[in-house]
Length: 160
Image: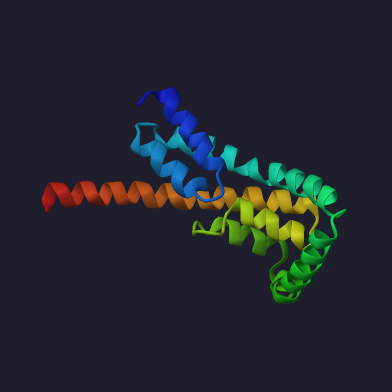
């Protein structure tokens, strides 16, 4: 696969809700892109999720609020979410969002962090900073785990 194709796929994986950095970083490193190029590239693209997601949600939300079924569903959904999550938000605040996004597990990335912050009516600027911090943390974890896993596999194969 050409380097351009690897970068294109890495960009796509970084931006997709399911894969985000968990898919992009291992893919790029496995396809010959050094970690010190992969990390900033994937993190920068994944950090762009927050403003894009926020704009998307705000725009479509305003359009959909004119539909009664949507506004009723949205009001019930948001109220349930606020009741469940409010104590955690009160306790952890923006650091909680950053840590939530920073844990590289399914359903804990930039998309979900931005959606949750938006639904809870949190401050847009602080949310963006928390998401970026979380993406940086997640990128460090994914890169380190991937590189350590490759090293361990090399050692096992050579000495196994």
